[in-house]
Length: 263
Ligand code: 48F
Image (cartoon, rainbow, N blue to C red; front, side, top):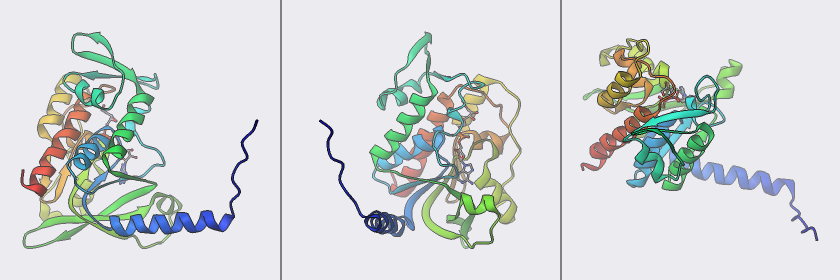
C-alpha cells in the first residue's frame, strides 16, 4: 500500500521559507560569535561555542560543509587523526579504526557529516553560500566588532551588490590555507599591524603541534584557528592528518568563551 503524499500549494512553500529565513537572519544580525568557514576547525569551534551557550553562526562560502576534509588524502577517502584529538571525534560518534598506538583513521565523509551534526545539534547555525568579504571595526580601542557578508553567488557573478553586516563579540577566521579574514584585516586596517607570512612546506607533526599552540586572538575581537594560523605564522603544512585542526577549533572556542563569559 502506497501512502498518499500530502498536497501543498506552491505559495505556502514560498511564504514559509521566506518568513522562517527572515526570522533567523534578524536573530543572527547581532550574535555572540561568527565563525568563518565550515571546515574541521570551524565546525569543531562552533560545537564547543554553542555547547557553552554562545549564539554562534558559521558562514561558509560553499554550499557544503567539511572544507578540506572531503578531499581525503589525494582524493583517497580516508583521513588520519592522532591522539588526543580522537576524543573530540568519539564525542560525536565518529567511528575510528586504530592504525598504530594513538593513531586512527576514519572515512572523510563520516567525519565531515558528524562534525556538522555535532555543531548543529549543539545549537550553532551553519549558513551556506555566504562569503565573509570584509570586517567591521571600531577605534579607541581598535577592535573588530563583526563581519561584512555577501552571497557567494553574487561574488562569483561579479555583480555590484552592496553587502550586509553582522555584529559579533568575536570573529574566528577558520578559512584555511589563505587566512582570508586576517588577510582582509592586514590589507584594509593597516594600523592593526597584522601580517600574513604564508605557510611553510610539509612537516606533519611539527605543523600539527604549532597550529594548536599558536591558536589565539590575533587582534582584539578577531581570532584564528586551523590552517589560518599556519598561514599567519609561517609554520609547516601537514596534509591529511586532522587532529591539529580539531584541537585548534576546541582551543579557540575555549579562548572565546573565556573572553565573552569571563571564565
Ligand atoms: O580549508 P578548511 O578545511 O580549513 P581548516 O579548518 O582545515 C584545514 C584542513 O582541511 C586541511 C589541512 C590540515 O589537515 O591542511 O586543509 O583550517 O576549511 C575552510 C573553509 O572556509 C571556507 C572554505 O570554503 C572552506 O570550507 N571559506 C574560505 N574563505 C571563506 C570561507 C570566506 N571568506 N567566507 C566564508 N567561507
